[in-house]
Amino acid sequence: MTATASPSLAPRRRLAVGVASATAAVGAVIAVAVVALVARAAGAPWETTTHRARDPRRTLSRLVPAVLLLSFLPDVLLGVSGSAWSGVAALMVMHLAVAAVALPVYARLLALPARA
Image 1: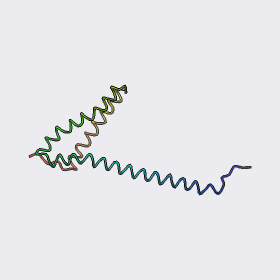
Image 2: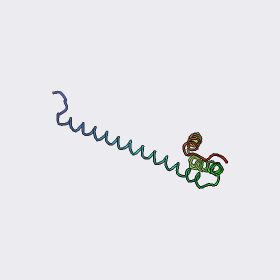
Image 3: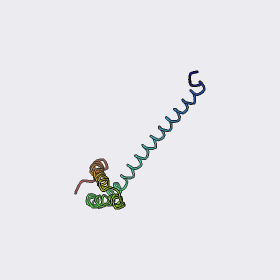
Image 4: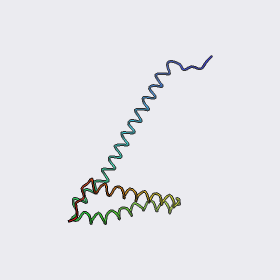
């Protein structure tokens, strides 16, 4: 006797594949929505600062380094709690890389006012 799949199992397999595909599609849509939401949330403080500050460049030149330093705090706490300091340093470098890319992009796309 050979082991062949019953014909009644074929529709169930197709249904399982269809459900998995639909679940993956929903997951992808949620991931894109989360990325868009985070990007918007990151841009909102920038826009508020550039529109309300008397001198946006001066304000941001003080605010951005302060926020960057604050972003190192969880990394340092990881190192103090026993994580490898090489990993902590890698996380800090990632924070710097994000700031190095995001700042020029925000300045260009969100129209930072020119110096007077």
